[in-house]
Length: 325
Image (cartoon, rainbow, N blue to C red; front, side, top):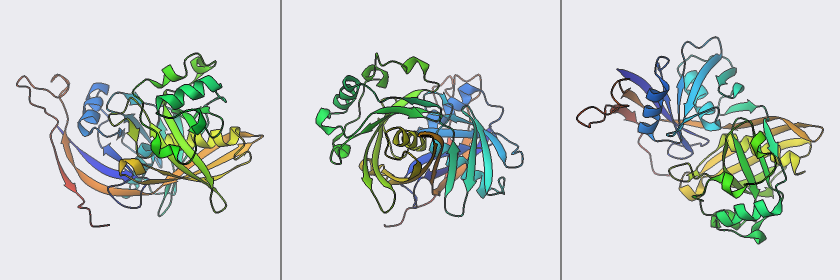
């Protein structure tokens, strides 16, 4: 059995940058174990499995990392919607994705795709000892801290750690689970969504908006770092409102992925009422990279391994060849 797939790069204006995503079509009847095996075969940070048919401009999708299914993520949401539009399955400028975190609104423009997420988790500011533990865990110290630390998310939750400008590049990925760094902080048990990683960032005033340099460090990822993280960008908007940097809401742009050689650009817009975020919008561009077919594992094959030990997850594809620059 073979299924079609597309590979796109999200949050970038050129291929072979941003964050990679595989979108696998026609997988409605696959088991969770089969979807997970395919996600492991691609080994991107996420792979999505949109369900057919698309009902008007609403569709359902499952999102998998190579380790597990997750309720929501930013670049898979934008990339999946972009692919479905390119195939003519989404025809309006607005659409809705149904995923584990609920219904996610989407706006599909000519150049950008934007999601609208509802705030779900907000905790903070964290006590000083937790902030220092987080800093030490990524190779920094207390002198590098540049503001209050918040835990925030809208489908996936992150620790938002503001640091001095030079500290962003000096940070090193931690191999310890994030929960160990914040153990004992009151309220962690009440989080609605998984605590995913540390969003290390520096804020600078841009031309009428906040300019952010960020890295997302996550010990559960194979590379320990993510080049572009839309869900963290949404949570950052919540933290910016709560910390008083954008008390009435506003726009911010994020540069991420530089240290990984996959530069990315994300645009956030948080709406606030009464000093609290009520909607987080994150957008970016999407670039096609490859398409093809993948053979999926039989439900009885031991998740893709035959009795001879050969993998049944083989694929053929067409790939965009990068040009200089």
